[in-house]
Amino acid sequence: MVDSVHQFTELVTTFCVIVNSISLILLLIRAIKGPTNPDRAVALDAIGINLMALTGLAAILLVTTNLNDVVLLIGGLLFIGTIAIAKFLEKGVIIDRDMD
Image (cartoon, rainbow, N blue to C red; front, side, top):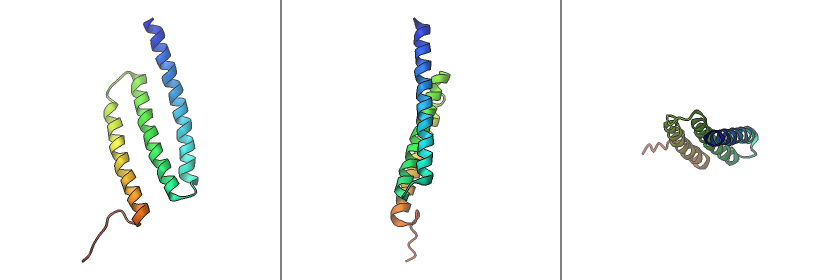
């Protein structure tokens, strides 16, 4: 019984990795070809989320909890990058320098 559960978990996780990889390829195409810069920004954000998912799936396949810190790190960097891209798209600069 335990062996069949392990095989099923491995099968489902492998399927999720394949679907996630296809999604990453499509998002990469959208990030390169995107008709507008906001479309590219959303694609980059979704790529980061998919990378977090792939890291989580790798942790499941490797049966380890050591990759949980990596998922949190990717999430933090993704948040900072999203804020920077949004600010750049809105104002044209990331760091405001008021020289009064």
